[in-house]
Image (tube, helix red, strand yellow):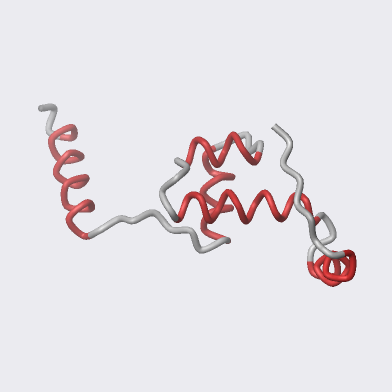
Length: 89
């Protein structure tokens, strides 16, 4: 699907000073904000931006400060799971 944005020419010129590929940057910002709002998953962001690997996607999200909500409790649960697998259970 193609989405068109209407932006006054003078504003486009100003924005292009900061971002030469303005259409790409607009899509990146939409992807990052959608991830922050929990509308898109990491996999969907990866597909939307055409990244080949999860690492590229994670790097992009980090650059955009779109961090995964990951609490200390989540960490403890992951560590317990890791211990169980390490112990062969």
